[in-house]
Length: 611
Ligand code: M6R
Image (cartoon, rainbow, N blue to C red; front, side):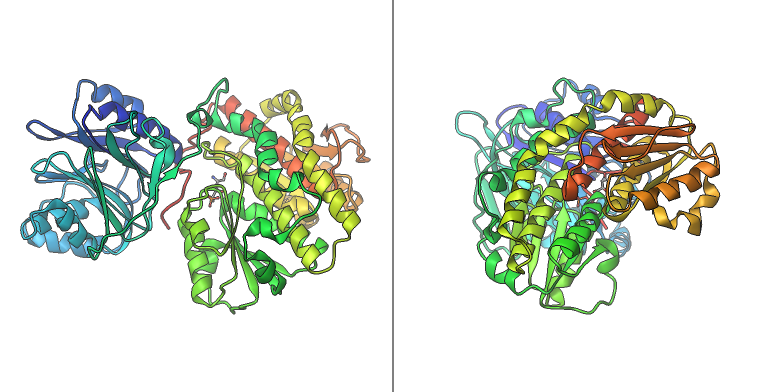
C-alpha cells in the first residue's frame, strides 16, 4: 500500500526521503513522488515506475523540509498526474488511505474555484487545507481543522512553502509513526509509514494514535489530538536492525525469508523452548483468567493469515476440544452474526495493520466480544494495541509481498495456543505436554532439513513455467496448506491455482484434469493417506500429471505421471509447518523461471491498509 516519508532537518533531506521510499518499496506501489520546500516555492518530482527513477529525476534537488510517497492506486489509474504529492497553492500533501467523502469535498471545493488536476481522493485534502488556510493561517491549526472534515482512513504529511521548516502529519486509520532526533546522530525529525524507512536516521520511534496530529521541525516535535488537546506519546527504541531489512546474499526477499524460517521459528518459540511447561501467561498477564472461561474460538484474518487460522482449527478442535471457526475478516465485518461473549476472538495478521482484520476485530468488540487475542508480527501495530491478549511472532521484518516466515511462525503461535487451551481444559497430560514442547524445540532443525530439498524443487519448477492452471490437493489439516500453496503460486507466478480437499475432486474439479493441469498433492503419512491415494488414482486415470510431496515413510511410489518428493521426516501434528515449505519453494522457483517480479508482484501490496 502507499508509503509516506517526511522530514524536517537542518541538513539536505532529499537522500533521506529517497532512501526511505526505497525501504517502503516492499509495501507495493505503482508510482512515486516527492515535494520539498525550495527557494522559489514547492519543488515537486513525480514518476510512474520505480523509486530509482525518481531518484535520478530528483538528483541535484536540495532542501531541508520535504515529503515523499509511493502510491498504490485506488482512485485513478497509475499515472504521473495521479501520483502524490498533490499541490494546492503553497502547500503539498501526501496521503495513505481512502477518503470516503472526497466526492462531496470535491464538489464543494470546485464550487469555490479550486481546479482539480487528478482523479485522486487525495487532491481534495490539498485543496481543503488550502481553503482552510484562508481563515486559519497557521498550518498546524489549518490541517487540524481540515482533518475534522475527512471521513475515512488517512495518514497524511503536509508542507507549506510560506511556512518553511515544518511538516505537519496526522493519522486516522492508516499507519504513521515519527522518528525523532537521536542525540549525536541525526539532526532532524521524521515521519513514515513504518519504522524500516527511518532506521537510516534514527531508532527512536513514536507511534501516533488514531486522531493524533504532529508538527515536526528540525529541533522540535509537537503532538496534539485533533481537538487541539496536547498529548504525550512515548518514545520506543526500535529493535529492528538495519541488516534485518537488507537483502544480503539473497536474490530476493522472499528467498531470504523462506530460508530465515528456522531462525524465525526459533525466536518465536524461545519463550516455550526454555521451559518445561506451557503457561497461559505467554499470551499476557490476564490470559489465565480470560482463557479459562472461553467456550469457543473465532479466528479472524485475511489471505495467508487466514490459512494459518484454518490449519489451527484442526489442532484446536482435535487436541483442545474447543469449538473453533475461522472467518475471512472482510466477510465477517459485514455479516450479521450471533455474538458470544464467552468466545475468544483471535485476530491473526503479519502486519497488524490490515484494514479488514482491524475492522473485523472492532466489529466483534462492538458486538460485546471482549475476549480478544492478537497473533501478530508487529508489536506496536493497531491490531496488537486493540486486543487484550497478544502473542508476538518474532519472524523479523517480512518484506516480500508473498508471506512465508510470517505464516510458519503464526502456525507455531497457534500450536502454542492449542496447548494452552488443551491444558486449561484438562486435555493435556504432563507427558504429552513435555513431548510437544520437545517437538517445538526441534522444529527449526526439522524445517532446515526440508529446505535442503530446494534443488529437486527447482527441477520441478521448470515444468510449470508454461502452465496456465494448477490444482493443489490436501486432506485434513493439509487442506489449508494446499490453499496456501495455491495462493503462493498465483500471487507470484500469475498461474491460476485452486486448492481442494482431495475428497472433493470427484464432485466437480476432476473435470478440469488433463495433461496440461499439474496436480500438486500433499501426502503425509497419516490416517488419510490411503484415502488420498485413491483420489490421486482418479487424477492419474484422467491423464493428469501429479507432483506429490510425501513423507519418508508414506507408502506411495513414483510412476508414469507421478513425480514424488519425500520430506526428511514426519512431524506428527506439527507436520503442516514442514509441508508448506516445499510449496513456498516451488512457487518461488516457478516465478524465477517465469521472470516475474517476485518481491513486488503486480497489483499487490504488502500491507493492505485500505478496505
Ligand atoms: O498483514 P496480514 O497478515 O494481515 O496480511 C493479510 C494478507 O494481506 C496477506 O497474508 C496476503 O494474503 C499475502 N500477500 C499472502 O502472501
